Length: 75
Image (cartoon, rainbow, N blue to C red; front, side, top):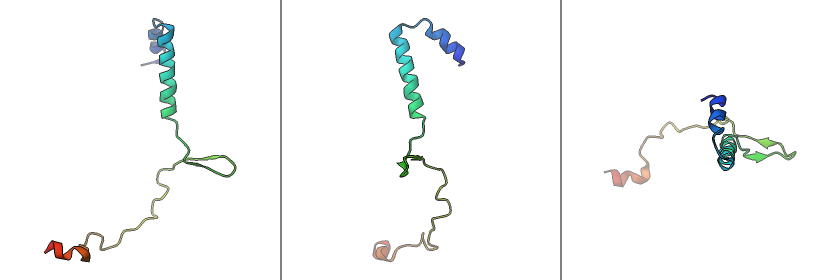
């Protein structure tokens, strides 16, 4: 829906309803704004970055092998 269509529909709303629409719009904007996960010493925000830890993890070659601790339960 285009902005012009929204404004045409709001033309018939009461002041209270327009206030609710504006408040809901502000709520949606806040929900879709990235939130900082921390702040640096100088006060600048730090945001999450997708893929920041890519390649830093590892998995043992025998990850899927049964554990010795559970051998008696698996017999």
